[in-house]
Image (cartoon, rainbow, N blue to C red; front, side, top):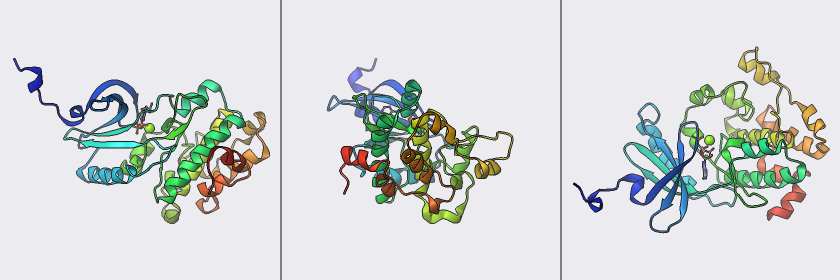
Length: 289
Ligand code: ADP
Ligand code: MG
């Protein structure tokens, strides 16, 4: 018999007690964990390391990416606290956010009127303007990757950072069904012409997310029977939903400036904060500089 004290704890278990599963993403499991030394709870994202998923190069890239992400410090970004690598997995220790994700939040509300969607949008755009200023792009912004605190009103926290870069775009496209609403057309079409406008992919996602908040619907009508490139180029925004929910002219204009096919015509996140729809709300919630 081995006495308990002699059992050597390895990897994440040295410092954390792993408790229940919080959620599953496309390639990782997120577990609630108790930090032994402080008694504080965290969310640990466990990324398995079979060679098919994470090549040594990818792991290097992931670790480099994590070093950058650990420097991010913003009230609307899920804080990355620690990175614990081992032979079998990579564990990302994050701030625990307990109010569920934006997808479920919209679903249970049906849709969000402008006075509820506005403050959340201001927080989202402020977080995005911050990372863009730091030279980082999220790339996989969607309601499932946006978490909310369990306070009233909820505080928005963007999660799932930087990982999109490490999963190749083919894998990402394979895991999607239908025409992707939240991914910018130049990402889906793998159009490299716009490589200098990288951050504009997040602006597209924000546009699609705000549309979903204000209407509870996807922003696009989809012609399922057409090939994907044609569908991406020819699809139109379902403005009638915004009309049905009596969205203001400013709100429609805001979304329209974000859902521009050409990244060069698409509004940046810094400009989004100064758009007439958002600016008054932003002045109340954030501290514009
Ligand atoms: P993936 O990159 O595999 O999509 P995510 O980071 O989106 O993984 O996490 C998957 C799920 O785990 C989320 O939808 C959410 O329910 C839960 N989750 C992720 N991060 C946290 C967190 N910091 N606090 C609480 N729950 C989280
Ligand atoms: Mg996710």
